Length: 190
Image (cartoon, rainbow, N blue to C red; front, side):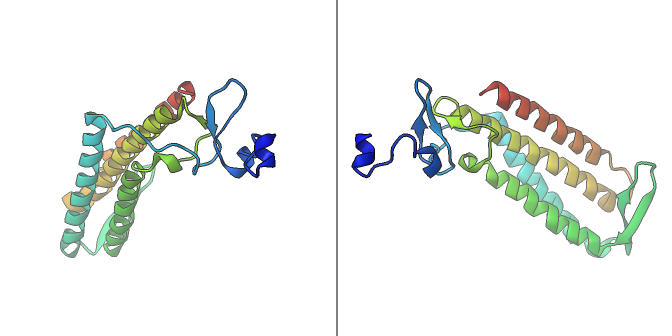
């Protein structure tokens, strides 16, 4: 009460103003992104390598695909239905897809640097913030890898002249499996 009289933020006002606060005997809680602590961990070698390789492969395969567009046939496969029917479209579609997928992969990789801004389905506390950050960053590393596999699976039929998109399915499976794994783990790490 004395703090409120001096013009400071009282305990009851702290959550509404986005400031860190402590509820009774529980750890310090961060109700807003601004009040959260900075990440103080580094990714393990495996996840750093996976992220670096994913971005490198995405950049290289996208660049190579874009360089090959002039030598591609006028019509290229652009959609594969579940029944196996293939739809064809202009090779300018290849350019559009490559220029869309590459920024998505790079953007996802860049987001791994800013776990403080991620949305979590519960409040972070002093006790769980760093492990939640690490888990979320690892999930994004796997999402980046899955997106790279999916985009490579799209580019290969154009580059090789076949209609095999098995890597798209593999990438989709990795994407779904990794997201389920890390979301379940997020709740266990609370």
